[in-house]
Length: 295
Image 1: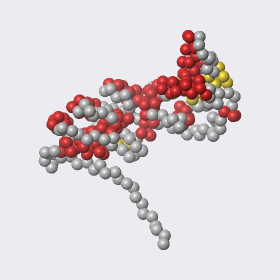
Image 2: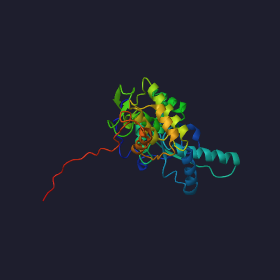
Image 3: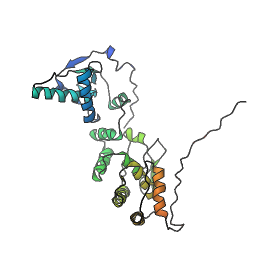
Image 4: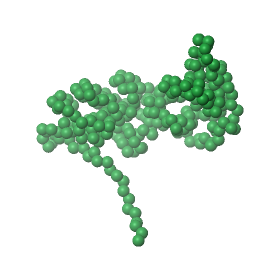
């Protein structure tokens, strides 16, 4: 997918330069393919706000010439739900849906419009699946198969987090590597591993560890990321780890991958000979530079 380099003009969303329309005919509008899904929680909050303050005209939605909603799908859904209730009960005043028509917008522009309410990793997944990106369809299927309702933990399993080049995606254990970051994922450049047996074995192992210690949120990114890092080690034995997990009385888990690596290795290395122990440097490397001091 080519990155969209088009710059949005500063006044493109300035309502003072555009005609604001109002209507209660909400069926003529539609959702753009690849737009993030409507948030029911946001819809309910917006309904209350619109009824109390009636700010819709001051903050109109933006649609393309075909009435595809670029920004404001939650406001649109809020008006639809409320107006339907008014018609069915005969009680209440219909809400007017205000909007401006703009041209030339792509999904990338829509994402930039929502900087104050940025897209989640799940929003990107839904968008790319909606647009038929095969690698994202495979990722979604993988997530559903193993009960992951959040995509971030799976990206941790794949070794993807942080900035470009900071982390490496292991295609097969200890063999092939390629650079992959969350920015690649957001840009539509995520590549699903051609052979995913390694990742299936990893995820199954993670879920088994979770079944041994039900108190652990085994699908959390920091736990998945920690196990994924240890899993890469050639001397790591999954059966040995599971046996030791069953024997230990407690494990101190935190919302930190380095901490969880230490906690898991403390369990794994107990009683092991030096050649079978696993040592992973979890200290964060800090970039430094030398500066001159005047005086």
